Length: 344
Image (cartoon, rainbow, N blue to C red; front, side):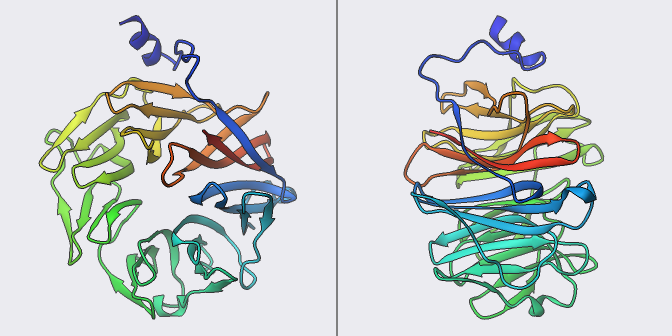
């Protein structure tokens, strides 16, 4: 009971067990501006992509961002040359293999694009078929001929890549996605859940007692057809819900339970549990909440001495229990440095 009280109030947790893994700083890189990494793809321990943005410090991180990407080959980090003169940021990325890596840029100026790496170079993947001014907020890569892009073209929209061109599809208003397979895809909007069964997208009934007028969904993780998680807040109270293949049930979240916290990106931990990013409302570092297969929660915080760290994306290295994270280390109000961490 005492441990739970400590976890509930201010995230003051007991010291972790001696054998509990800790976050390791893998990479900090200054692109010469206000930098942040927002997406990470881990194909293996020696094949990792990280994506984000860099903005001139003189602009105080205020609107002239350019997308950036780096690759880890197991020996060294290398900057990737993206096609064209791009503006905006890379908001999400995914891959089905080392020769099918995608990055989706977001921009309010119509410069948004879907970019694809074929194992040799990055190319623009036919954005023109999406219309003149798409703004891509998120993408999902499930195969060479099976890629989803979500965003807007003046109104909320979704597109599907069949290997040759983009086709406009439903659903709309997609905030985050997660997939078990090409025929088992999940998505959340601001206040609803939808599921794709390989043929069509359908709304999913959410747990009774949730008021859509106060509900805001912020994260989703589909581990298996009978293991799906949704995170959000209901009337400013953080919550988690689990789908076992038949019905939804609420799940306790011991930390944080304070109002205004936000649960975001989540991944499986390779042991039957999950990890999810938790962002506090104040100017302090992101935490990672870990839930074991037995239902026990713990809290970890990547650290760089004296700095505030904000995490944006998590990725599990396939076939391992190793999780990597992409984010930023705050240097000052107008300066930040891109960062990559690993929980080994």
